[in-house]
Length: 363
Image (tube, rainbow, N blue to C red; front, side):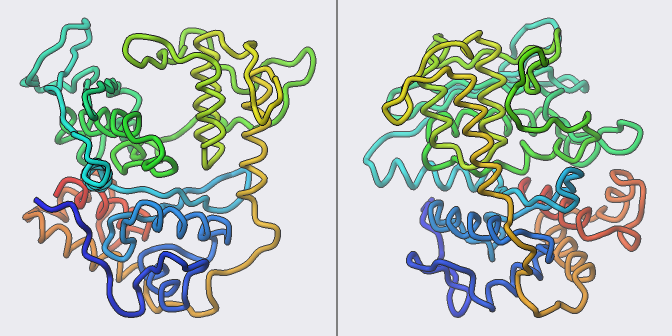
């Protein structure tokens, strides 16, 4: 099957030399669910990401998802794609470079630590493991079900996570492995399968700032909840590789994840070289995170465009029903009510869009 993308024609086509969204493109993005709370910096970064990945936002290959941020008192938008988008990028990269791409058999793990090559239990697996092999080099990744499962009211598992837990966990593991194998091509964009848990009820948000003398580390992981080690070919990543990854990061979330993992490896006090300077890894990661946070913060409130669209909720419902018909789901209304506890007619645009993306990712 060809991995080439069919370019969008007409006024929605994204040009490689384009520096901002056209009015027609901005209107189409609004129709897709991006409201006026989006920051200009988020829109600019999204355009750059679409150009770099060559994924088409108007064909729903890549999209921006807004989630409420209490600190900024607005929605913060994050780029997402499906696991299929990751696969398209990976196949395109190896075809261009003349490399090879393959997978080892997917494995699932139960709560006792025993691995299986097929998951038959009615209970969700504890984890899944996927190994991507790029040009002969192995990139293994393990995703824990508990870290990615999507939950709704009363901590109830919802969406496809309730119906296909083994498949969804394996998709998350595959996304992790592909991002390790293709770090430059997949940096800055996460799959919908990975981000489903982002809407779960979360602990109080931590702020990104320097650690003051005598204060606890604001990024430290609580005792008993230490992250897994970052491993490549059975070896933990050294401090310099954490610094190099942070230098290529496109948002503060990526840097915070690196910080937590480096802390789990006791590498924060190691010396690294950054722009010909020698710094402690922990201090550099915090400084890099602050830099990215400042770059993403808008200097003044601006809107995408002055044009308003007529009925975004009705448009989102129409897209949801069209997607359900495409994947052959004839119990959409019942499944939606079971997942969200409300009917489609009572739902908001975020819930309708989320369900559309879940169904689209499973197509």
